[in-house]
Length: 337
Image 1: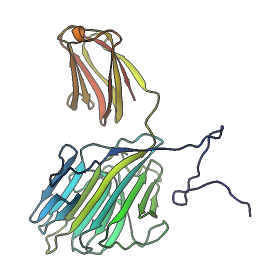
Image 2 (image 1 turned 30 degrees about the horizontal axis):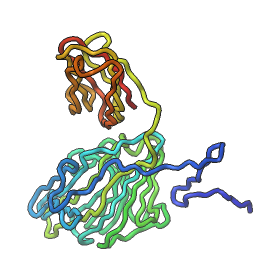
Image 3 (image 1 turned 30 degrees about the vertical axis):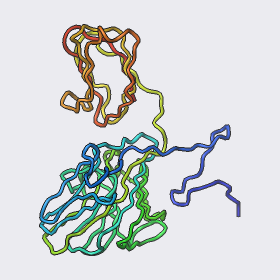
Image 4 (image 1 turned 60 degrees about the vertical axis):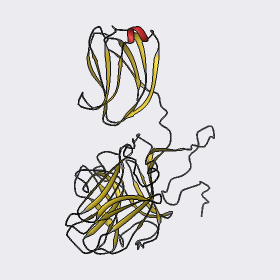
């Protein structure tokens, strides 16, 4: 038998790669979203959006952990999602990491979900990947949803990883989901539970996702189910350093321009020709001026010098749209990716 000296990850099946010059290819972990909850008992609303509905439901911070409770009402729920999205960069891998536990393993008509996903109408999932726990059957599943469609779901007993089944208890465990366009890996306590791979369609219509979790009922009951989240974050395996795009805008006068659809980073603006004092440049995260306003630059004729540049390093998620208005337009070079 031939000896294979290559170093491989037994969970992903990937080998360590070297350049033709013998340098190792490595990737640093960069946190994209999922900061601390905030001190004390108040969840920081600048970074987390929380919601609850029904008697006994809640989202509460105490002792450095967040507890979601469904309450006992029909369709009762507690959920959260990160305000900031985790941008996905083609060819790289994003890495969701959570420490969590169930407050109890039972709970008829209850479901607990957590992972990198976006909501449709919460707690329904629009896009992304998640662990789910059915309190009626006490069954753990792994899931993927594309554009609000039916979930691709695999339950314990049918896993294809290092184990075929997994029984979740009420202790804290480490949950990881590594995802890119070609595969999604579900890992618990460093054990590969399941690998999903797309066939004729992507597993998710977008890979730019949020840290999310929900605890909810499908009918009224006597048990209020709980999910305790200790840590919850999404990281990128690798840097976004790349050769950027550039655009020369508003040389023909005021107007608007859509520079990119989807997520990216506005790196810097370079002033080529100052406009009049009243001229403004408005920058939106969106596909038009109904997007989220991120910055307004004005009075460049008196404050800006030709060749001056402004560093932004600002992520956007829906698109990059700019509007020049009032007076004589300034001319800009935009550097972005």
